[in-house]
Every structure is written in C-alpha cells, then in structure tokens.
Image (cartoon, rainbow, N blue to C red):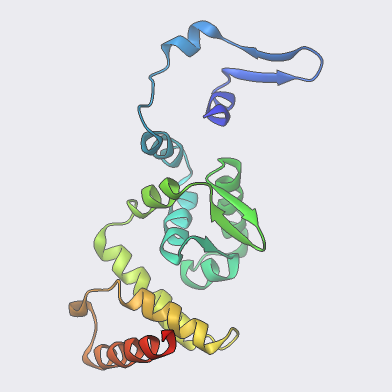
Length: 178
C-alpha cells in the first residue's frame, strides 16, 4: 500500500526532513476494501510483459526461478529480466533463497486470474512436458512436479498416449508418496 502511495507521488521520504505527504490528495483516494483489490490494482499497473510473466510464475507454483520461466515463456533473457525487475519493484514478488516467491498468497491467486482456462491448461501442459524432458534436476522431483501440472489439465486436452502416461505417472507418484 505504501509503495503504491509513493509511486503516485503522495508519500515521500526525505533523509533531512523526514516523511511528507499530501493530505488532501490522500483523502480523495478510493479506499480498497480488501487485499485482493489492492493486488489487482498493482497487477493492473504492470507492463503487459511483466503481467504475463507473473501469471506464468503463478502457474509454476509458490516459488519460481528465472530458468523455469525462460523455458516456457519464450522471450529473450533481457525481456525476462526486465519483467522480473518490474515485479520486484512493484513488491509483488521477492527474491529469496535463490528463487522468486510471491509477496502474499493473494498475489498468486490474482495472477492466476490473468489467464483464461485454455491458456492456463496449455501452460500447465507445456510446463509438464518441459519438466519431463529436463534431465538437469532430480528425475523424481521433476516427475512429481510434472504430474502436478498434468493433473491441472483436463483429460480432453490430452492425446491418448499422454492420458496413459498421466495415469502411470500418478500411480508412480502415489507409490513414491507412501
């Protein structure tokens, strides 16, 4: 909230004189009645590329790394970095422990709403396929993540071969979890 006021020029900090604000302008601001509307306002103010990246990150889960984004977003490194900078500057995501995490669960929830069902299903399918072919990380961890993504895709959107594979992977994931 305070970052939003700062960005609108309604709140400022001067190291010599301290905090200053425009009381009249602050009183005219519409009051957000909940966190979701605050998050939506902040997301709506993002450049289009950053909003798309935020939605992609939300599909990846609670945390994501740039390499995961690059693999499914199909943009140049500079574009990914620009979009990530915008997300960090807006305080929607935070870099910690080698990954980006959402500043709040509501940020991720609102970001997921940026994609319609078809786009979200296609993204989960691309993520799963990429994880299944990526041998850089632990194969079991990738397989479990891939199954999570595939389980978010309607069966109708899968070809017959993939349907059988998903059933086998779910069985293996269930056995592994025991």
